[in-house]
Amino acid sequence: MGLHAPGRFRPDRRLAHRFLIVRIYTRRGDDGTTGLFHGGRVGKNSSGPEAYGTVDEAVRVQAEADLAEAVLEVQRDLFVVAAELATDPGRRDLLEEGVSRVNSSMIDRLENRIDRIDADVGMPTEFVVPGGDPAAAAIDVARTIVRRAERRAVSHIAGASDSLVVPYLNRLADYLYMLARAVEREWTPTRGETT
Image (cartoon, rainbow, N blue to C red):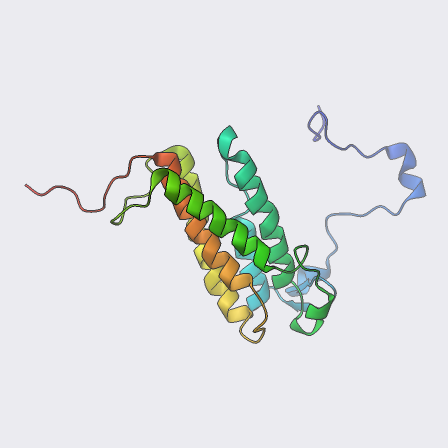
């Protein structure tokens, strides 16, 4: 049994001599730096890697079949967010709208989804205890990670007034909150009944 799952890409070792073999390790990061999208290197603990590393944590959420498409779209958007955060501010002109730079249509899409959930199940009128369902709990964890990514992005994007990363992450956290409530359908308020 190999490391490759059935149906996954398997390199043909017979062709390896024709191509440059790329390894997962490069040793370039051993000095504590990391490469940026479109070139340049920064410390792994600088604001950019902190921000896009946190976005990366939120990328994978297990979702039931009826949520899978919506979650997949968000996961793909997060790669756009990470690409923008991983680009040196001096090279922002190389970014492509909707591919490596957040655009307003990505935010509009989230707002439309929030509005549809609100019309379908409503919005809690008080704070709720999250995690009333395993899928909702996973979405709520992703939401808290997105909020952390938003805080990191605020620090990193401070000089780029044209960036929509922070508004996107803000709206995404709102969307994930509403998505989790839609999954639960019944909410447990934070204030229990007093006796």
